[in-house]
Image (tube, rainbow, N blue to C red; front, side, top):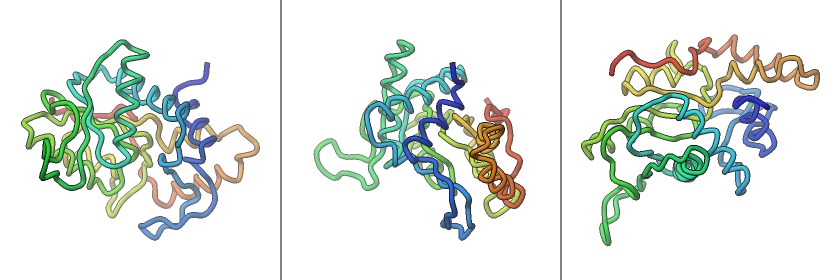
Length: 225
């Protein structure tokens, strides 16, 4: 049976969520790959993605009282993860997500869904500048809950403005435990040995040499409890 990492890359390549070529990023860097989970746009694909998130979360063994998805991409991700946890593992967890702007009528507020209580785990696509993480942690803390961890799809293992990756910066700044379904190193390993990806892997390796951090183990976490 294919590993979780293999299933993840097969899914994202088939959906076009992971593509290769030449892409100019917001940072101005010329990247040989582009990753966008917004391209997963049908039921079977989003269901499989939810299963991958659920498996990753279950593997952590984290105490989890509620799942939280930062708007906007985190909203379908947190819903499909909650469904997969129920269907595959018999685990029922409430989920919540935020509005970009507070609602001033009806139930009001910025948070939709289950109550933010206890240990909260974020479900999101990637960490770039860490802005969504900081905003999410602030919302969770304001509710009196504990921002415990985060599951992301891909750790790019790429430097930001300094020497650390965005994931490493988020760990340091927020104290969150962060796991990724897959890492950039996993991508290189996945492509290795496949003749059709030889040139692509070379371009990715060159990009890592220029901008990569070397990354950490996808399970590395802060020591604070």
